[in-house]
Length: 113
Image (cartoon, rainbow, N blue to C red; front, side, top):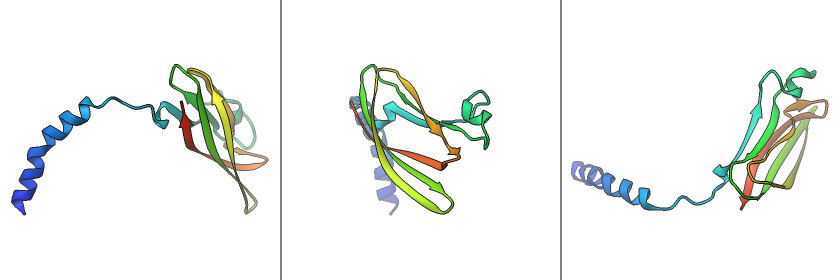
C-alpha cells in the first residue's frame, strides 16, 4: 500500500508538467454569472430588496449563452431556458433575484464561442 502511495506521489510532478503544457480551451468559465448585491443596484433599492442577476462575457468575441431559469412563487415553480448572444466583454442585467414575480434562480447551461 505504501509503495502505491509513493508511486503516485512520484508521478505528481510529471502530471503537473503535462497539464501546464496543454492549451487552455474556451469554457463556460469565460462567462461569469452572479448575483450583484451592491447597495447601488436597482434590485437592492426595491421592495423586497434582493440582488440583481448579472452575466458577463470575459472573452473578446461573441458568445451564445443558454441559461436555465427557475421562478418560484407561492409554492408554484416555473422553469424555462433563455438563449442570448453577448458581445465581446459585455455585461448584462438579467433581473432581480426576488421580485413581485417570485424568486428567480439562474444556472449557466452552455456557452458557445
